[in-house]
Length: 277
Image (cartoon, rainbow, N blue to C red; front, side, top):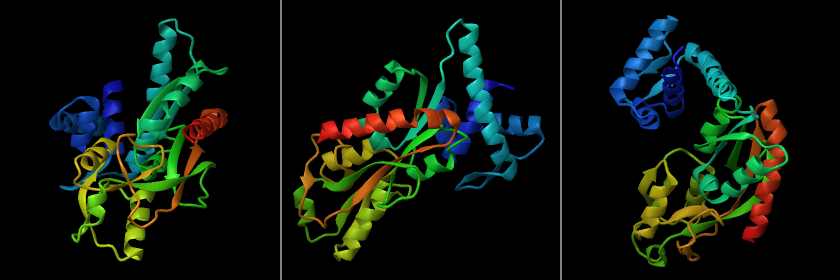
C-alpha cells in the first residue's frame, strides 16, 4: 500500500478537511480527493462521510486509522534499518501550539541527547484533538486542562494572563478577542471570566494557530488569553480585565513507548517552568 496515500488518509482524518490535509501533504484538494477515492476503491469500503461543511470518518475509517498510523511508523523504522542506521525508539509527541512554540525545544533536545535517546516526531493540535488521537497517532500528548483535571500526570498549574493593548480594555465598545476556533480551556476560561464580570465581548479573530492570535494582539486589534511564559515576550499584558484562573499542563501516555518517556518529558517541562520563574 502506497505510503503517500496512507499519509494523505491520516492527514484528512486529523484535519477533517481535504483542503487542510492538502496543505499538510503538499497536494491540491482535488488530488487529495482522488487519492482517498482510490484508497476506498482498493479497500472496498467508504472511509469518510463527506458534506459541504465537514469530513468525518466512518466506522471503517476509524478502524483503518490506527492501522494506517502503525504502518507508517513501521515504514519509517524499515527505511532506517535498510539504510544501516541504528533503529532508535520512535516517539510521537502531540502538543498544543503554545506549549510547542515556547516550551518543547529544550525538552526535545534533552530527549534526543539523553541517556535513552529516541527518534522524535512532533505535531500540534488542540487538546481535544490530541486526546482523541492518543494511542493511534500519538504516543504522548501534552495538553491544557481546567484545574483538578483527571487526565494523565500533572506537570504544573500555570496562571492565565491577558495579552493586548490596555486601551482596548477601557473602551466602551465590546472587547475584541483573538481565540482558537476549537473549544479549548483557555478560550472557555476567558469567556467565563468576562461573562461573570458582565464585560461585553466579541470575537475579532477565531483561528486555528498561535501565529495569527499573536499577530492580532501585536497589531492592537484584539486581546487574547495566554499561559504565563508561553507567549511572545514582546506582547504586553493587560491587568485591568477580569482575573483569569490557573490552568493545568498535563502529560498523557497512550502507548508503552509513551509510558517509557513520560517521566523524562514531565521532568524536563517542570525544569523549564522553574527556569521561567
